[in-house]
Amino acid sequence: MSELKFATRLNSFASGANRYWPELKGKPSVLQMIERAGTVKGLTHLDLNYPQHINEDVKTLRQKIEDVGLAVNGMQMRWDAPEFKIGAFTNPDAKIRRQAIELTKRGIDAGREFGASLMTLWMGQDGFDYCFQADYKKMWEDAVGAVREIAEYAPDIDVSIEYKPNEPRAYSIFPNVTTCLLAVEEAGCANLGITLDFAHVLYANEIPAYAAAMVARRSRLLGLDLNDGWGKRDDGLMAASVNPRATLEFLWQMQRDGYKGAYYFDTFPDASGLDPVREAETNIATVTRLLTLCKKLDNNPALMDAISRQDAVASQQIVNDIMLAK
Image 1 (spheres, helix red, strand yellow):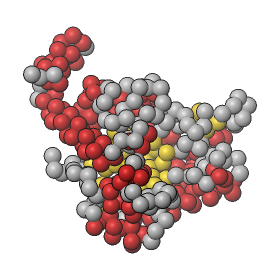
Image 2 (tube, rainbow, N blue to C red):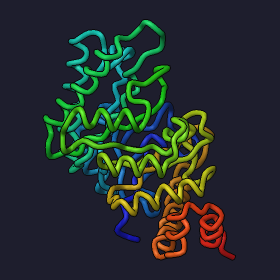
Image 3 (cartoon, rainbow, N blue to C red):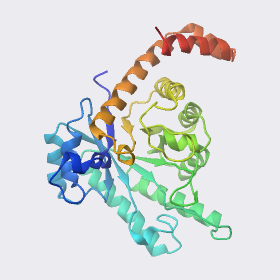
Image 4 (spheres, rainbow, N blue to C red):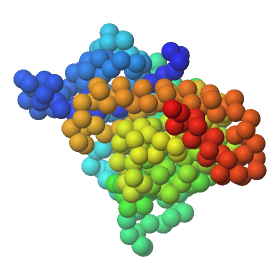
């Protein structure tokens, strides 16, 4: 499986900074985090947050990433500036909406300089908190219109919407797979698609494999954030650490639908002080093993027969024999 792309969250490598860099005062730099990421066995790519991580000359960053043997999988937008607190694409101020759109276009341009062909839009600021706060139809039209303009700006780049039910807003404008599919359809751009974050899907009260199947049916799965959680918030736990069976079904569904993108780990080792290198290597090893099991599921006519009959007892016995083999 050497052809697989494994990517991870760059900010994870600030975890345990005082132990890894005893002389460090404050937070590690982007260049330091890149160097630490380069020590992860099996890691092939990084995703960069824009503009958060572009605080160095792009040429310097690109060279550093190449020097540690990695590449850039994609860019992920972050509208962290105070003016975007009540919305980026859905801000009530048209000037700020324009600012958010133009910032995203610059993020796409920066991604091109790294050779990245994916821009992920997690629109955390776009939503509402109170009844009678939002004109829902206008907010929706502003969000879809902004996504459409960005996709039309860069037809050679895949633009992917990553949904999340809430946080930081109480309710997100795109909280689940259904709204994302509707937005992609309304925007009408061939380069638009969806990113599924496993933990986000769980606490949207969705079944991960079902969400993946619906994306494949109506759009394209452009990105994948692997992690796990207890379904109540964005826990960012290690892949398959809580829901191994659902993770296996999720990966199997994606494989059957022809997913060719990176396996990106959006996990939070910093939340509990884990060694991010060991944590990333564990994620890679776990997913590699699960993908091997997917091949056994593929070549199993008994399983397909059980599923065709919705025979849950038979299918569970077959999966148990594969997952829990002696």
